[in-house]
Image 1 (cartoon, helix red, strand yellow):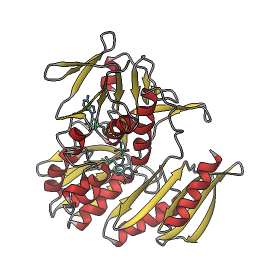
Image 2 (cartoon, helix red, strand yellow):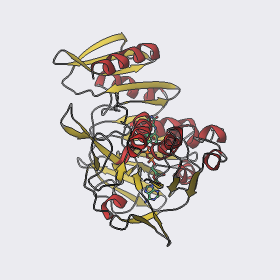
Image 3 (tube, protein in one colour):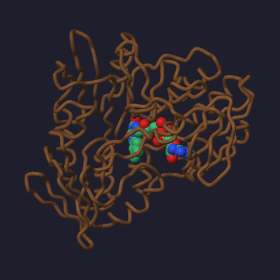
Image 4 (spheres, protein in one colour):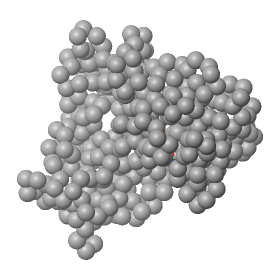
Length: 382
Ligand SMILES: Cc1cc2nc3c(=O)[nH]c(=O)nc-3n(C[C@H](O)[C@H](O)[C@H](O)COP(=O)(O)OP(=O)(O)OC[C@H]3O[C@@H](n4cnc5c(N)ncnc54)[C@H](O)[C@@H]3O)c2cc1C
């Protein structure tokens, strides 16, 4: 019988798993361990309202403090798991102590990718604890951002609103190129330019150095940019450190089957940390979006209880910059055939990506009802 379930990581995947265990009728112990000091919160707000300083605290939290004890969920914040002894079925804490488990969920999320070739650690943004230093660094000054993905673009928009002069350097041709085709990326570049932010594409950074109170970035073709501070936002890598101590198989993420089981019996994984086997694609797929992490946390909890997990569904997410929301679902490739509805270059456009006669993905700006309809169409065919 499963008497104690331990969850490592209280992001949306871990927290949703804990809630789902209770809502599914599980009455054993649930221990939810979080390295962060905050109560479980809405990470997408970090680069938006929390960095801007406009967030209402209650709205940042997944649940109020009382929720967890009332549900019989033992939430321990500021506690880092150092390793797992899978033979003895215990997790060991960084500052001593261990907890036994009957089943274990790894929901350790992801951490920012480091910029190759840079000698000194540069600021990154992943959680609440990173905000204050970044806000101090950009306060009224200038900021260089490496990366024009979701986080780079969102921080650029927030920092510009806070009065900073912002420059974004991007290896790809257009911003948001992992989720949006160039026709949308060009609009995003224009949106930033209209707000005083320059996004330079096709910049391969050779070095970013701290020189006195300034930062100097040099590209491989010899161009140079200077600013008061820099932020590295070039994507994230799955946090597999603890999983590896248990001997769990990892590649680009903790490898799990369609029921979120890792290669070690009794250990499951979900969220940004996990790469789940997709039998349709015959490949492991790792998502990095809020809704996927939430859905995976719920499905993994059901699987831990021996219930059939709900199917993964369509991967989708959103990004908000200067009050404009970009929504995306499915997977778009550069060689897809695009169907454009609305007006290119404006916040009123939907792009449907077709491949081999099938709908593969959608990106939409300012057309939420249409986005939902196309996302449902994608879900219906998966
Ligand atoms: C700044 C930012 C903005 C974002 N904006 C959007 C958005 O607008 N839309 C969208 O769809 N997605 C967005 N995302 C992505 C989304 O937030 C993530 O996909 C989601 O939060 C992943 O949830 P998770 O629970 O898998 O991992 P996480 O939220 O990363 O949580 C993992 C937790 O595990 C903890 N942990 C790790 N190792 C240990 C350990 N050894 N011991 C104890 N605890 C541990 C970590 O400290 C962390 O608290 C954003 C992400 C960031 C960083």
